[in-house]
Image (cartoon, rainbow, N blue to C red; front, side):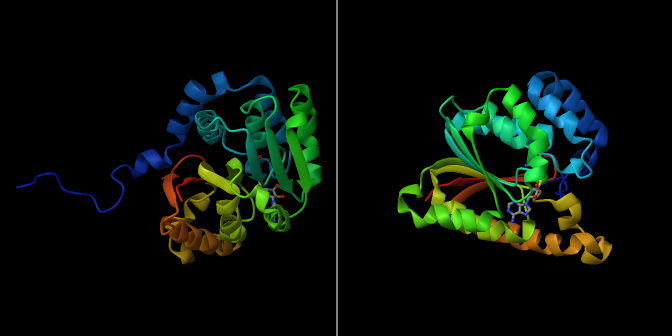
Length: 238
Ligand code: SAH
Ligand code: CA
């Protein structure tokens, strides 16, 4: 008889929740290797009232691996804020690489620009001050853009994630990666709605629907990773 009882939920929920473990990972493996201008940008962002929105540096480190493994040269970023993930991408694509970066909040981006300039990487960035949906639609108006992007990072309004996905799946090349941030939405995806702050409920519902739809999308291979606030990594396979 099988003596090992099979847990019906994650066997290690404590690990997923432990702040001490996160601190350990950051101090051991992430901060010592974080590029200097990136660290400076992250520190400058803590003064922004919405500073918590910056990409988790451990998730950033994982993104770097994907960029490198893909040899990514042409990327899209939806949701720039002060530019942590943008600078991270710029640092890890070749000299002639290009990032199309879209965000309606130019003011937040301006906080990051001096650090991107200091790193000498502004030339890689095509910043478009706009909501992302019309920009993606515009890109798709030219069929020559289809299947040409190596990597996309989506970190913006959660109620639009599926809209972004429908467009990005056409823009990304087969074998390319689209990574979606905040797909655990503060852990609320695993809570009953009643236990969730009202201000978080709408995007919790969007995230639940998005996660389900992504899981059912046969055009992708996925990994839903519990890093930062949840990162869903999708590789286009058809
Ligand atoms: N990736 C960033 C964090 C992004 S925070 C970093 O590493 O710091 C979320 C961002 O999404 C905000 O800057 C917000 O202005 C942007 N956003 C909100 N709605 C958007 C939309 N419709 N299109 C593009 N960006 C949007
Ligand atoms: Ca985020």
